[in-house]
Length: 313
Ligand SMILES: [Zn+2]
Image (tube, rainbow, N blue to C red; front, side):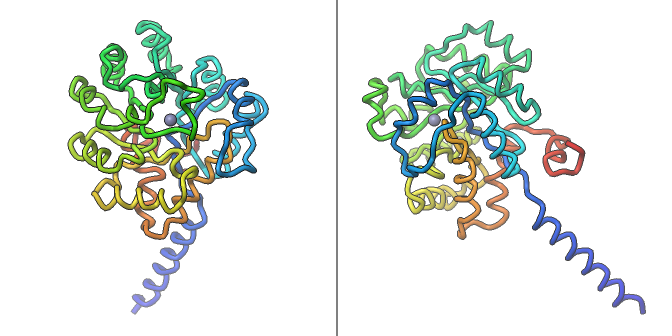
């Protein structure tokens, strides 16, 4: 006799729960952020962007503050930040130690193995990369990097390596940059020499679709991020690439990244590109914006619960 009331009650609770999840912002992980130097900010005033109204931050302090403010606005609960200047990277990490994991950015390593190991052990670094050997004119499988990958392997530190392309006209400022060195197939020797390395393709290997699929298929430890291609290339092209990766069965290996560089506002542009993709289910969006990175970065159940507001942050 009480059943209809019970059912009504359940619907009310279910409806409330649904309304709550709808209104509550879901957590997002951005696996591709940078700290930048003042010189970079100054140079980037002249960098041609497809969105001319975007302006670089005016100082290192403002860049950190604005990046954290956009993270707040979109509920980005964790950001992986790398930069060439390790002191600025540390300044960034200390501004929000619960939300920032820091990593050294380098093409040719500037720190020796022992110094680097000390920084990981001290918790100053938690990831390795973004590594940018493509800009210096050599392959990710260059044997000179082996000791660094062995270190990452032994510390179980995830590694991010730049793939694909760069700005139009990049070789005028980085004369050793080569498009061919962004081909994900160049990862193959490195992956076989370091089978336990957790590595991801920064910028998702675009535009090397077939090569990226080949690498993802054969090497299950490899993930990718969609940084920069989610806001800088034509939207239709980004969606076609994303769709093709999902069609090939890799929706569970794609992680959100912005690569905000000097322009913190771009963090939101990339997130909106995912939210507006009507070919993605709500579940696929959650995977890209949070779940895949949480799995790849091996977050603990406690960290995940915190990110979802289930435990006080
Ligand atoms: Zn990059």
